[in-house]
Amino acid sequence: MFRELGRGDALLIVDVQNDFCPGGALPVPGGDRVIPVLNRWIAAAREGKARIYASRDWHPPDHASFQAQGGPWPAHCVRDTAGARVHAQLELPDEAELVDKGIQRDRDNYSAFDETDLSERLRAAGVQHVWVGGLAQDYCVLATVLDAIQAGFDVHLITEATRPVEVHPGDGQRALDKM
Ligand SMILES: [Zn+2]
Figure 1 (spheres, rainbow, N blue to C red):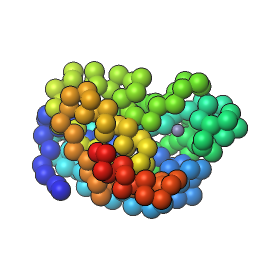
Figure 2 (figure 1 turned 90 degrees about the horizontal axis):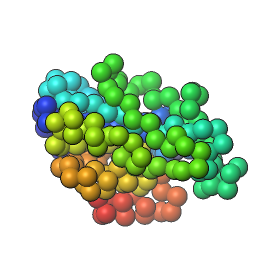
Figure 3 (figure 1 turned 30 degrees about the vertical axis):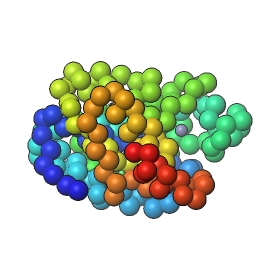
C-alpha cells in the first residue's frame, strides 16, 4: 500500500522513540524495523506537502503507568531523557509537528488524540486522510487509529510500518482485526 500524499493528507507517526525500540526500556520486538518504511512515507509526505505529525509518550518520572507506581509497564519514555527521544534514524523533518501524550502523572494516554489537541490541529490544517504507522501496533497505534476514526477522519493504517509488543501472544493480530 503506497500512494502519493497531498495537502489533505497527514502522516501520523506514533511513538517511534528509543525506549520502544530494541535496547530501550520497553522494547517492541523488531520495533526499529518500522523506521525505513516510515522514512519512505516521510519522503512521500514532504514531496506532496502533506503534514507530518509525530506523537511521543512523554511521561513524568513517577508516572502512574510505571510498575513502581503500581502500573503495568516498566518505566519508559520519561520526558527529556534519551529513552524518550524520537529514534535518531527516523528522518523527521524540522516541519514535523510533535504531539506529546501521557504528560500528566495520574493519567495514561495510549492514543495520540487522547487529551491532546491533535484533532483540532488536523482540522485546522485541512486534513481529511490520516496515514498511521509506528509503535506499538497493539496499544498506542490501535488506540490512535480508533480515535482518529471516531473523530471523523479517513484513516489508513500503514500495516508494514507497525509492530506489536504482544504482552499476550496474538495481540498484534487482534489489534489488526479491530482496526
Ligand atoms: Zn507510556
